[in-house]
Length: 475
Image 1 (cartoon, rainbow, N blue to C red):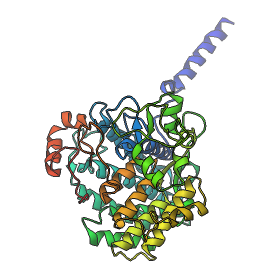
Image 2: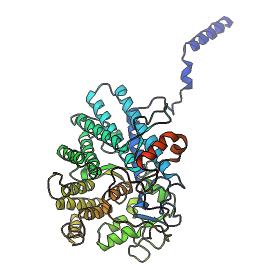
Image 3: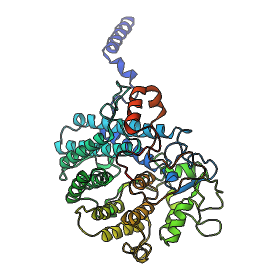
Image 4: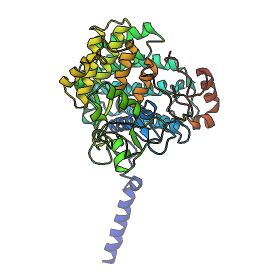
């Protein structure tokens, strides 16, 4: 018996030596390799949350374009971007939380999707389309930014590149991506929260983004803008609200609407409606106002003055519709596309139809998407103050005001369009620390650590100030 135990012990020892003990160091909850599709999903989520957020540490565009007004803490309403490091937080969210995941996904796709060449090609193209979309917001917000040297962990001091050069490269990338998409194949399936892998939908999205990017530069490079816009329209842009790029949040945490998190889950009472948009919509008898805001203490609609302390109980608040946990984010929509087409007609770019037709389509699409009816939209458009033929001002004013109203809850886009069209003619907030910002300053970390490249970039754009107009933003 004793000999048997000795032999058994020796056998077990020998067997243990044959096992791979390094497997004990593997943490199953923190894998060393990640599926590309999970990185793509996470990038979509972070992107949607960033552009939708109402957190004053990150996204204050609703305050800048005077959709909302703060109740007690007024720094952000008065354009104090530095107290909470808002430019730093926004920069980090887009570079670290969106672009890094997209770049890593794009590198992993060829290694992981090896049995379906068409799927691989579609996944790479769609990932790059979202990269272009993300860089569009960075370059139209800051100006010159790190680009070809960005996202390299071994280069902590990336050079900044000329914004217009970056922009042209983004358009080239978008053209390549559109050509690469094969609508006969599949892509990400349900890992794609926006279009559930529908390649045809992504192609429309890419062309609509191309239209948007073309119109953004129309004042500075008309020839390129015209070519870009007509090419996008010929290839196929959004034609109804069914095409909208919608990111659907869930009813339960952690993937909930960030506005619900900021205003309801947190129990905070930081915002009321802004007097600017309330007065504009009330004057026009706009049918969307109850979808945008609650009634006030007197049962009507009212808003606080920009930059002024505004009692929460007195004024209208953001409507319950947008503060539900599953209210979706919009990345790009049909209404926006139709406004671009109306403007293109006015500028002499051949996109078909008339400016009035596209304007009507844009307004109707917005009213219906928010919960109104076609009949309500038609009645609204029949008013002399709204009708394209009789509304006051030039086409920039007509389109600019209606686009500003339609882009409610998409403050970042509204800010870009306000700078580009110069309407509505917003007045700076009470006791503002500056004029209404037309760009964001560079992050403090860039100023402190990437100093030489920061200084070069600041000089190149005309100064790192919120009043420095970017290359595409002309009077």
